[in-house]
Length: 155
Length: 117
Image (cartoon, rainbow over all chains, first blue to last red; front, side, top):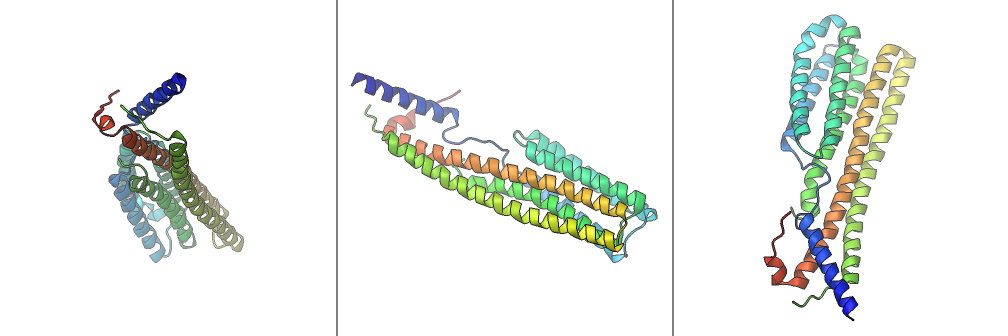
């Protein structure tokens, strides 16, 4: 009988310890939702959509048009740099960080393609789809982090 | 201090709470992944068709395929992230149940306890 009582006491102590170690009932495996990342990626998506719409409207671009696009590429580079620094500053945010690095690679490749062979009109929708897929992926993950607050344990 | 805790019931409630949350999260991740995989295949097929028809050069087609491949990496990371969030929510749902059960069992004595690491 004493053994049962002792083991129950040990169990209680263990449970209380678990609760205290997990911050009174919640753990965090991924960084919290970040409004700045959400806004920053949304702004980049708009700028990219504007860029592709312009290219499509003018019937595609040639390598000689590249000089007219450097402002857009510079804006994307600076914006992404800021977002990557911010994402890296948050703990448990490596997934978002990796996604932003992928987006940076996509812009670098686009700029290289633009400089080398221009952007044919027929290719514009496919470029846009590829970029939008990445934007959506980043935002889907970010918004899912936000939903966690209302769905999981109270924080 | 009298401590009444039905361990079997609490464990059952914890499993039930976490299983529901985990299933919901898993379903969301599967739905998202299926949609994106289908879109990716359609896009690659379209690029291939354009290259075959001569609408775009082979070089441009390769550039587009590379862009799509990069975007799919971002999608796979999101799927991984949704899984992590689902597990996190499941653990926290179980901890919530445990927290409530402990609070009820210990009553006011538990509420006044402070823990610090």
